[in-house]
Picture 1 (cartoon, rainbow, N blue to C red):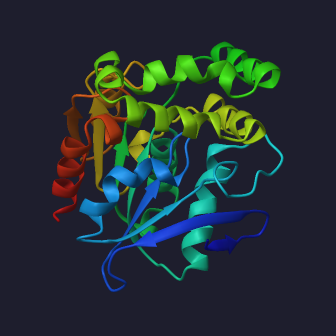
Picture 2 (cartoon, rainbow, N blue to C red; picture 1 turned 45 degrees about the vertical axis):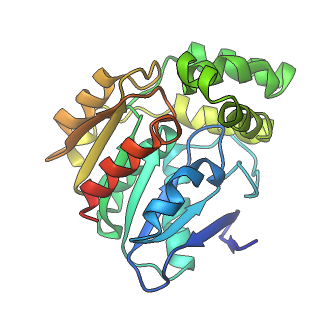
Picture 3 (cartoon, rainbow, N blue to C red; picture 1 turned 90 degrees about the horizontal axis):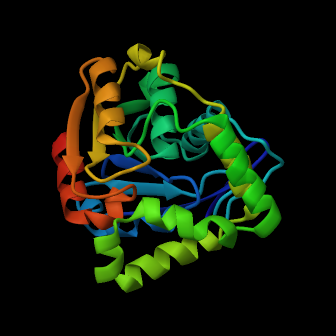
Length: 259
């Protein structure tokens, strides 16, 4: 299991695909780990050296004391690229990962060829909503929020027709470290990028899920209209569009990349 030891955190990562291919980075969402990208590996590794990692507080990466912040999580990725001697990469982030992509697109644009911002928004919810979720996890652990979160991640139709995939998504969520989850909730709660989108200097794809109740198509259009030159696309899915609409997701992102 490969790790990169950064200044104050140890980041777990995996790589797939040809060693001499261009590097493509996947950045996970809140409550997940690098396994969330399993539906993408076969298609993307045909064209890219795929790098995926557990962001701080999730998976096998270190759970450092919280709360975290989106800039902190974003620079973790830049430091990971430095540790792996990677100068410039392609990027795809979903939800919280998309927030990281927006931040890096304006603060470290020379490190990225392009960015795919999936099922994300410049701002998520209200502080009161996030504080209630944090309190619930403090009191009851990850199981206290799992049923609510999974209803947002996947549509009822998908959950009914794909019980194994749904069970795996729930297991991934419930296996998250509660303190890491809480610390990352704070990062999302405290970030508002809506007035900073014009500073993104990297070619961007904004991908929304038609049935996403978290980052709605309206949120996606908001981003696409304000990020210079951004493209907009939509797939028939809720929040975890890379799982629920994997074929459409893969085809859309790969087309954007020119693969």
